[in-house]
Length: 331
Ligand code: UDP
Ligand code: MG
Image (cartoon, rainbow, N blue to C red; front, top):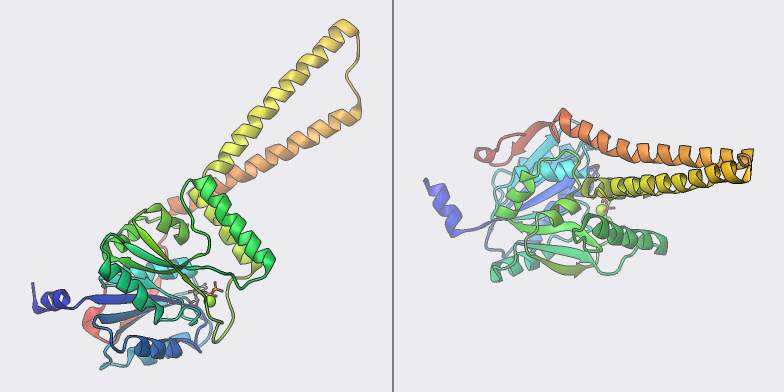
């Protein structure tokens, strides 16, 4: 073991994973906020920015940061070949960290870097905890969005039998081995909130209030949130398939009873088959149920299709660092 190894032992490292999509106005401010927050922090600090195919000058700003060769921070910038989404950006970041503690944080300063100190402090003091997570105690959004989000967490917790904490964010700090566990789940349809819960470990929950976005606008609109919720349920639960089986069984049973009634009526009471309206109604209802069931099964098949293709989760065009010797492997 070289001297680098010994240095690591004497001083721990904190790594920050920062997904960035169209954040040109935020990354430098974010870096400055980190300088301020970690002024008296006695660990090495590593900032791993992931440029998730931004259409603005985010990469240009990141290149400026990477050119700070004498900086006390180790600064890395992973540049994606296109937009792969926040989930992929988080995965790429986690794959390229070297810290003993690893924090995921947004680039838009809605999550203040100084709040990380509290998380690290908890992990330093209590070795029973493996992870610290900030959750939104009070939501700033409108009532409807807030209600929908709450209902989503309740539903998915029930359906998947994994505990999803309402309002828990991706603003988390993990010990190194927790990061390894997260990376060991190599699925392509990544739903991190589910993955974080699924791997288990002791999590300490801290309340926080997100700030307003400094620059730019949120990438998640209502449609995006619905897709996210949908993908979460299908990735972490087979309850919809069970529901199809249940509905199918129920309708088979009802049909059977009805068939019995019709036969008895015909044989013993000479009543002919009931009218056209009933027939059409039954036909349409059953047709609808079959299509609905096919849709649900299709969702799972589509997921299997994506997994089987085994494409990489992201493609990085380049990985830059202000301390060259610290470049790590690509996916
Ligand atoms: N982000 C990303 N890829 C995307 C969308 C978002 O890396 O395709 C990043 C974004 O730059 C930010 C974080 O994910 O750092 C959270 O995104 P945003 O602020 O838009 O979401 P919100 O805070 O509204 O949930
Ligand atoms: Mg944000």
